[in-house]
Structure formats: C-alpha cells, structure tokens
Image 1 (tube, rainbow, N blue to C red):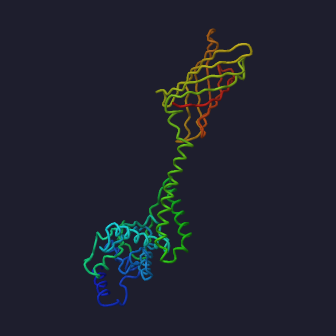
Image 2 (tube, one colour; image 1 turned 90 degrees about the vertical axis):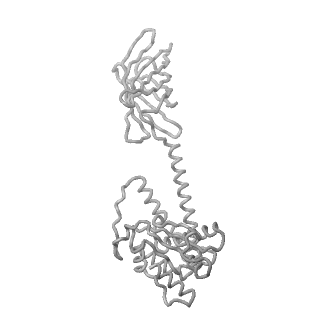
Image 3 (cartoon, rainbow, N blue to C red; image 1 turned 30 degrees about the vertical axis):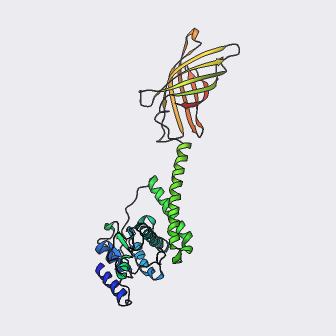
Length: 365
C-alpha cells in the first residue's frame, strides 16, 4: 500500500496529473489501517510555509473522519512531517501546527473527541525520500496517521461498532464526562468559524487554549476546596489542640462559666481523645473552681464530613477545696467553617439531668 502511494506520487510530480487520487474513501483508509496500523495521507496539502489546509485535502480527511466515526474506540496519532528546507526548529513547529490543523478539522467536521487524537510534529527528521530534489521534498511534506490502539481495528469489518468497556462511575469518570460535554459545546460554538479551511489553524490554537484554561480551573478549584474545607484528620484532629469555651449551667448555682480545654490524642480505641479542662464559674457572690477530665470518642460519618459528632465520659471536681467529685457524661458536635472549627456540647454530671451547655472554638497545633 505504501509503495503504491510512492509510485503514484512520483508519477504525479514528474509526468502529469493522476486520473484519480488512490485513497479518497473510508473503505480504503480502513483497509490500510487494518493492514499496517498506518496510513500516509498522500495529497494532503497545505499552503506553502503555513498550516492552512488547501481545499483538495478535504476528501482525504473526510475519509479518515468517517473511519473514526465507524470505529468509536479507534485512537490515532497524527504525525506531521516537512522537507529539509528551512531551520530544524521552524520545521518541527510547522509540522506540529499542521498536525493540529488536521486534528481540528476532524474534531469540528466529524465531532471526534479530542482524547482520540494525538498530534506530533517530526519536522524533517523522518524522510521517506531524498530532499535533494523537488520530487523527494514533495513526498516528505506529508501527514501520516498511526493507530495507537491496534486492537480496536484488527479483525474488525467495515461498519462494525465495537462496544465500549463500561467505565466505573467515580470522580474521575464524572470529570471526563464533563470534559467531553465542554469539548462538544466548544466545537459547536466554533463550528461556523471553522467551516472555512483558512480558520482551521486558529481552531487548533483555540482548542489548546481551552484545555490550558480547563486545567488551570481544575487547579484553582482544588486549591479553593483545600482552603475552604480541609479534610478532617483522623479523630478530632491530628495532634494537640486547645478549646477555649464559655457556657452556662442549667441547674445549680453557677449561671456562667469560662474555661479552656486541652485536646490530646491517645492510643486508646483508635481516635479517642483525652480532654482535661479548667474553668471558672461565676456565681452571684463568689467564683467556683471547676476541673474535668474526660475521654472523648468522635463519631466519624463517612470519609469526609464538615460535621463531627462526639460523645464522652469522665470525672470532674467542683470547688477543689471541698473535693466534690462528680461523674460526667457528654455529647456534642464539631462544625467546620471557612474560618475554623466551632464545637457545642451538653454535659450531665452525676446523672442529674443535662445541666451544662458550652460552646467554644477549636485551635489545632
């Protein structure tokens, strides 16, 4: 197949115009891809020194696009090549731009997903003929299509539609689905502008800019998520924390109290925390000294939550000079906000109804 292309090309350039281009239909393109995993798009021409496709290149690309539509799992590398005239860097850039123009045409005209097409510019590094004469240079100025996943074609007949493997539904697959929807919307929006072949290079550039902006948006969203809702560490925190609080007693002689609680991780029962605290209770005529020591058990809900319920038990002492000890049972919740973590808690002491309510702020260290 490749030799036939070369013979036809030499005949065209040295004798005269060929009666017909040898490959201009999907069946022939598909046969070449199945036989060799390769198709050399002879006759695919651009404006001199530019990446703008010429009108008579469209039938070849339409044949390739039809194969891609028929074979929805097929992926192709679009390889751009130039002759040896000009600098190496310029030729590599030009060949890459021409490959991107071909990709843009297939995306816009045939609605081919961007992830099915990869572009590479080889410049003049892979010649198939001599660069010492015009005929050889014309053969070297070419675009080739190479099959990336041969299993998608081998043994397939024209018209077959291989069933795509079901993809798992997870964050990545949902993001991929969103990407495809965005690509489709953008292709529809620029289809009119891209209908003229002279605009295809611009379409390729727009497509690259879109992907860069989507990637930047992903990074910004990820950064915002980390700042606004950092994943809670195991337990109620990864290390030592202080919890200043204030509250009231619903029963007894201590209407208002202020205190501070230490939060210390332990090796007991996984994420259990040890929380000693000291507080002052302000009574009408004097102050009460209050000390508590509790073991607190956070209740994890799923792998991530802004709300963390907890419960605990321990022992307390009121008015230390009188050594009046009490048993504590508590239940509460932590709530994560943009500015930090607040907690609220109800405690009963000596099983005499829930008689203490406090609220406070968690500061991790």
